[in-house]
Length: 333
Image (cartoon, rainbow, N blue to C red):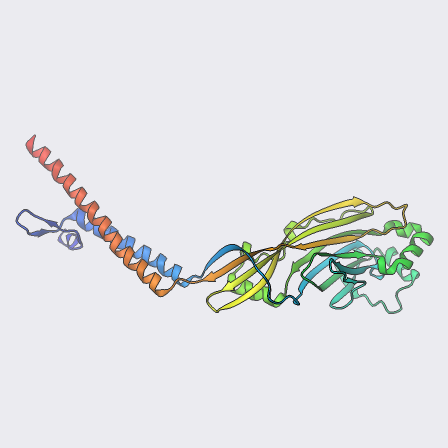
């Protein structure tokens, strides 16, 4: 019992000014020690763990000439690579047809599980090659990146650059033409530089602020067998990542998307299309990576030790006074 009482940090002062340890005081003291240790461990973990704060700002990019990379990968169910054209157009008058730089088309086999070979347009842009591809039930996997200006615009995947082949197919091989469709699914769609985004993930971790590839927001149209136009409306939200620990800043982009599929009138001379309409929000999300300072941590440590001691001391005195009152009542009775 004496050993337990020796832990009493809130020893009772008797009427003759003699300090008197109690069992209850020792239990209170041990509880205070446990709580202080727990809070100090939490404070240490908070000190070594960077914190992430988020705020909304209006950000003016000093580099107006910089571009945004659109990284995507999409596979088409029954569609010859021969007649797929990836085009890009924006609100300042740029219009690029059949973009080949940093883009590849790969032929998919009948079961859509295997990439058979990279498509080489050399010597393959003839009607007979298109018909053979359709009869083999081949699809097409289009992947790569396109650099866009920081203005609204669209990326459209269509047959526009191969209009002659498309029309010849429709007029001379109607049964084969009926089989093709822009039924598709995205395997990848995100905006920004791959290396920068990977660096952000390493520094800021995997969380809702670093969800750049939003495949969960994209519908899957791979089972649409009829001819349709597919429109995606994408709102780009710039994210400025500020690493106060290293002093570096990074720019990345998240997006929200809505889509719709509309029936295509096969009696017209037009062509079906997959259209990605994009627009950049003027509002920027600022994500700050920071760590508590040593001074801030030391202040919290002093507050923890002093606060716990004062609170448990008051509690101890109140309880001892209560026990004395109970004892006096029993003595008087």
